[in-house]
Length: 251
Image (tube, rainbow, N blue to C red; front, side):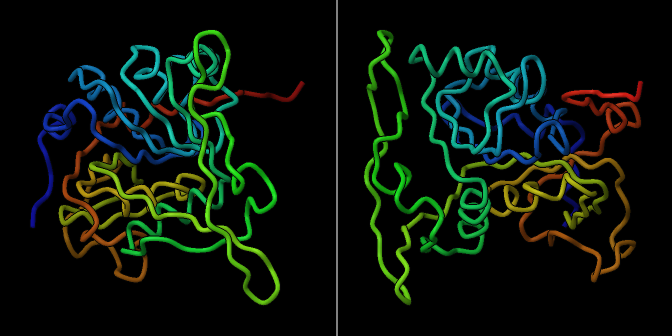
């Protein structure tokens, strides 16, 4: 039952080339930065990443991206990473853009064992019709486009079929966690971390504060330990290292 690893390096050691990863966080909030850095040092490449966004230049998943370790990204927002745009438009990176709420539900559905669901989001657009550029050719042509999706009417409204997402691994960051893998998230870090954790077959969580089993109230737990296989306790310096995408101050 004790799922605590001695280090982030140990936790990610078995992630192979070509693995699929669900990665938590929203922008730079709640990203598993220590696990991402450990994976960078481990050297796995050809990764298929599912995450709301792909970090920023030089931070978060942007570290793996800049090193050429990511082959495909499924996400909903990519506007803060110039290297991401360069790789996508030059044909080096395959990208599946998904409406943000749909991405959240696809992760949740996959984690709950639901293979597919219908949603009105994307009806009447290329999300449903197909044709979204997944990969460009070096000359700028569309080398691979999204396929059309099944649609069906419910109560007179058209819906599009979306598939649940499961991945080989998930990397997430929690505010508090116990040795059994029960996790609590804080504020905006709650957005995608629980969903990414559910979707991973093997979920690794870095936690800012590790407590003993029984210290967390069952009513307060955001993610039960059944979804978590490994826990990494952060140092105080690692827990405090939280970058801000666009720092603004009053005049």
